[in-house]
Image (cartoon, rainbow, N blue to C red; front, side, top):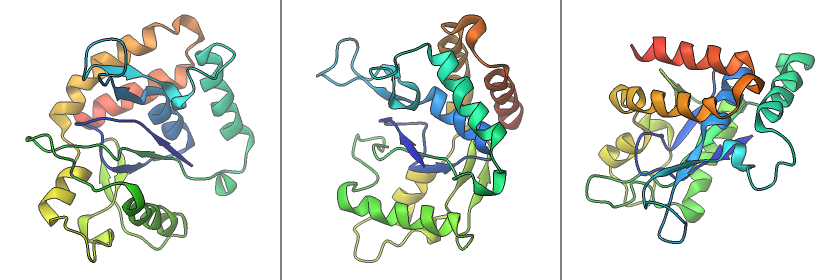
Length: 192
């Protein structure tokens, strides 16, 4: 299963979660940067857990708990892997690092190969990302450096993200499952 947001920095092109619970955590903190078409400051991150805020008819803390329960009552071997995608990562000049559109199928190819146990991955503090050579760039005008930047995990950026995630979680009060606090604490440890 893929969840995605629109971020110019911080979030890699694709990340595989460490577990079902970790995947729920990643989906719970996802968001997109506001554009000129959205109310608010351009570039400000608007959190949209699971990309479901406009559609969820009940409290998002309960929604997270529902996903966690699904994982708890299921055979772990039969659960789908969870991925977080970000087709919108940019370089310092503001150009997209990945061409997007139909070329996203190249990332989906890696996802399928991972699900089948045939593709390599790099363990990062936020989850598993593909090594540069695991993505087929045949015929693309994408340099290894640009792809590396698109897949990169900068611990400094993520450490700056942590207080924003904690602030995001505050809005759910006591209905935020403890597992989300656990995952945030574990991410903090891995980044330190």
